[in-house]
Image 1 (cartoon, one colour):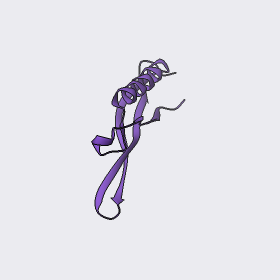
Image 2: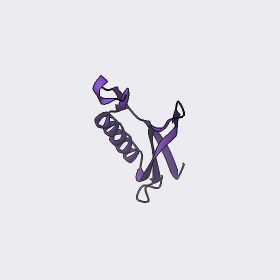
Image 3: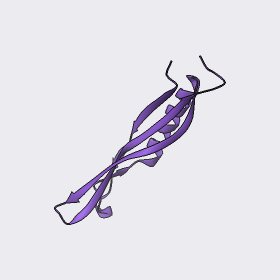
Image 4: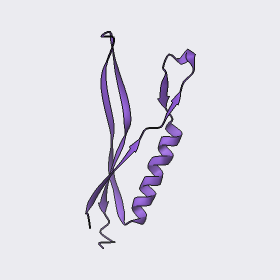
Amino acid sequence: MKKVKTVFIPATFQKSSFLSGASHYINGDQTTRDIQAAIDEMEIEGYDFMHSENLISGGSKHGTYGISFTHGTILYFKKSESNPS
């Protein structure tokens, strides 16, 4: 049985309006629900949530301005000490 597990939750994107200037943005409500569902599922499996990290990459667009993309969130879990099996 693994003592530590990681779970990747991809960011959920929505198309934005023409006026906002961005073609897509993260749907925070759906991404939060996905993260909570993963935490709940891992608790059922006997793991405790430890911490999370966002997976982000960046670059430049046409060499003029910097951009970054959040691809998703990595969740880290540890086997619960109260449930060692």
